[in-house]
Structure formats: structure tokens, C-alpha cells
Image (cartoon, rainbow, N blue to C red; front, side):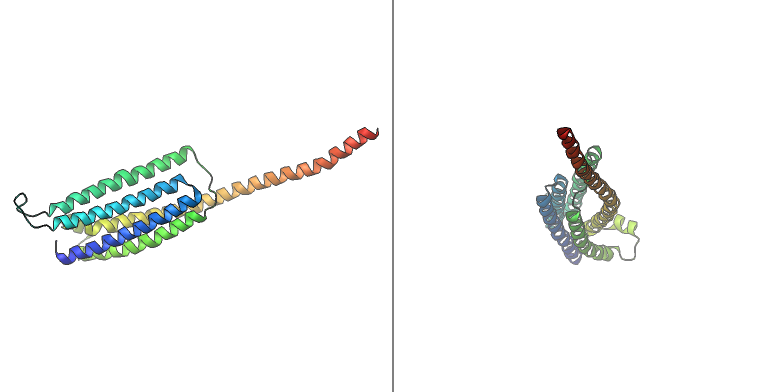
Length: 224
């Protein structure tokens, strides 16, 4: 891997780490404000993504060590090893957490309260992930050249050049799905809340109407 390619990959990975830290902090603030366990779980997920970026930087640094007696051809394969570890971590922690939260909320659904913090987190995540995606796309575009996407992935000697790009692409796609789901669920929740308010208001009105009637009946019994 050339030094300029490695430096460009480091820039993209660093941008992804900064973005994940910012997203994790936003989710922690939202979890503290709302007391949501799901939001806390998402914050942990972002912290794990930050650690994945650190592993990629470790792989790049380890792969550039000079040859020694035990590794006469250098340490270039270190990069592939740490990239594999990152992929396993993304699948094991990220996917497992998402599946667990999805099943939990399907079994025990809870109505959406104030969606303000949801949109704050989604908007912040879209901004930070989008910025990181731009850096990742620049690096992947340089590595790809005139080759096709699959050919570039198959023949590249720097897997970190496309790890950031595809991870951010998947994250942005997930944000679009989350926003769509929020927009779909919100009217239903609003209608349920409105119905509950109307039922409560109707009960109060019935009590208010019944009270004078009861008082009149009691007065009649007393006078009779």
C-alpha cells in the first residue's frame, strides 16, 4: 500500500471516528434526557463503531512495520486481519444489538412519547455520518479508479479504503429507514393520544353533567 493511499485512508477513518464519537455523545444526552434504554443501547453501538475505527488505524500502522526475522516479507497482512476483526465486530455487536432491540420492542411495544429527541438524534447522525461518508467516498473513488465497484473491492490491497465508505452507506440507509418508520408510527401514536384525551375529556364532561342531576335528586328526597 502506498504512503499517500495510507494517509488518505487514515483521514477517512479519523473522520469516521470523530463522527461516531459525536453521534455517541448525542445519543448519550438523549438517553439521559429521556431515560430510554434503547437510546443507551444505540450509544453503546456508536462507541463500538468508534473502536472499530481505532482497530482499522491499528491495522494500517501494523502493516507498515519493516520486515523482521519472523516476517521476512513484512507485515502487510496485518491490515487484512484487523479489517476482518472490524467486520466481525460490526456484525456481532451491531447486528445482534439491532435484532435484540427489534424483537424486544415487537414483543413489548411502547407508544412513542415526545419524538423531539428522536429527531435530534436522527438529524445529528445524518449530518455526522454524511460528512464521514464524503471522506470515505473520496478515498474509495481514488482506490477504484476506472474499475468497477466489485472489481475494485476484489483487487484492492487496502480494504480500509472501502470499509469506511460501505459502513457509512449502510448507516445512512438505516437512518432513512428510521426516519420513514418514525413518520409512519407518529400519526398512529398521535391519533391514539388524541383518542385518549377525548375519552378523558368525555368522562370529565359526564361527571360534570351527572353531578347537578345527583344534587337535584338528593334535594328532592330531602324535601319530600
